[in-house]
Length: 295
Length: 261
Image (cartoon, rainbow over all chains, first blue to last red; front, side):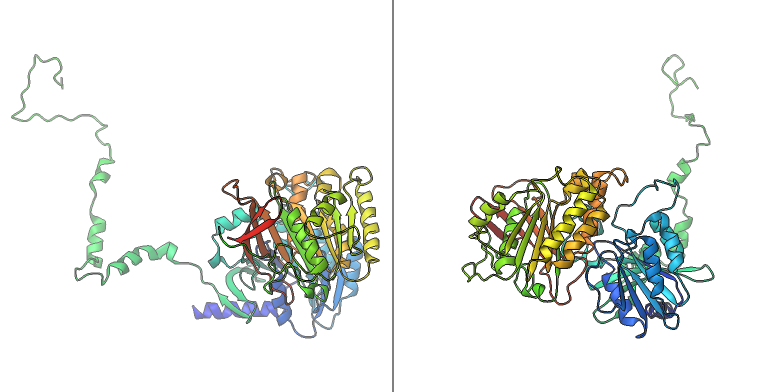
């Protein structure tokens, strides 16, 4: 197990430090836990000489870490692409942060991404999944949704989840649907579901708890007790409870499994449901009685 | 009945901290539904932005000293409405040079009807407000009406808000979030509920602090009007810390009382 946890943390660190070559890193967030802290974690880890370009659709004030800040909200996509491409530096790593890619129209999304992606450049795009999405495009029916296009292109997807220990998931969703923002959301400690796609086509899935205060990343192992652990649990529970032996040995278990239970026998209707009457010596049979069974 | 409480939004017991006017601009979203009108809260925010005081808090007799300009932009009420309410809180707005009221309610649908006219109005507004010297707090009330009544899209409307956000130290957007306004049956982007939900979620995604006014879930009560939830927005402040909590509030003719839940 330690091997899994080690390699997963290594992968996460490689992603944070931009060592893994990945043209598009997609971050999906909600109003319950935004991508803000995860982006900060990237900034904390990226090499010092990285050229950080911030494409803003919803941020008014330039973040301190950004080398270039582009106010994109009233720009045409063509002008935006030109401006982004003019900031590219081929000799260092480039990180393009898009504060919300929801603002880019679904129909030009793939074209937009392909025209800014270059070698030595990573696009780190946030996608808000809380926003309502169009069922179909007006111009092209059957065109995929923005989320589908992005998750298809992305080499890694960071799905951000609020720290679930503190919330009842159902109740939280109910509240968020009513736009009630409850206490304790948008924390500096949260969980991510990381999907990483290798070049071979294999995709791996890890869940982490990210603490942005002390930069600790803990792998959360999938919960196994649901699949197999249950019967073992009752055995463990009975052990040592009393001086009586309440557990069953393997031999007893085997014997127990082989017992044919009566209700199973009753399931086979070989006799077609007929009433089978066997005459016994004490039975009194009266030929005159019209209600007597005329077998 | 439990003890009456002071209103404060930050852990330093302030409502709008002084730091907001120095180097940590604030973007706040206030959502309300039918039955929980936000006007008492808006009045308290106006007072606090102007003087740093709060009439329902214990230290209300504190000496009032002007600190920020306040611009109220309303699509819902006219000047008289605010004048009367603020007078009750001891604020004379007629001779207050720092209080500016922009009435977009009277001309609503006459001069303000197409997306172009809205863009024009906001361009003018941002120029006017920019010329006001010193610190600025802007409160916008009822702007979500434009989504359902005109052809403007949620993104276009947000771009107009950006113009004011750039020049404000503190900006509060007050919007209705009734179920009928945000319940989407069809994902059709021209439906008012689609636009409103899209708009409010995009607002929340840039908020530093969120205040939610809701009626009691158990129904109407004689001595409680509703709950006020104070929570962090999706974007944290650099150093300021929001004091997350839930109040019960009771609005009566004379005053508003707050209790802890």
